[in-house]
Image (tube, rainbow, N blue to C red; front, top):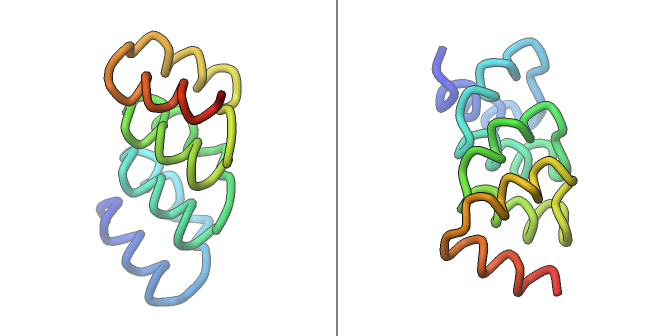
Length: 93
């Protein structure tokens, strides 16, 4: 199964599928959406992959964490130094 297929299955079932979550954790986009749409909160297991995508990290800070990212994600975001880094810095002020 692909991350997309696991995400769609979880949406269809309306609940988490723990045994398939490692598949989603390979994709920042679906990890973020799984956190927002299925878990409806922070998903620590997926944070390493989400942190690899500046836009998804920004969205995760704004819509899931609702504030400053955990330190390792925050540091990764600062290293990115792109337009989403600037938006993130403005958001957490």
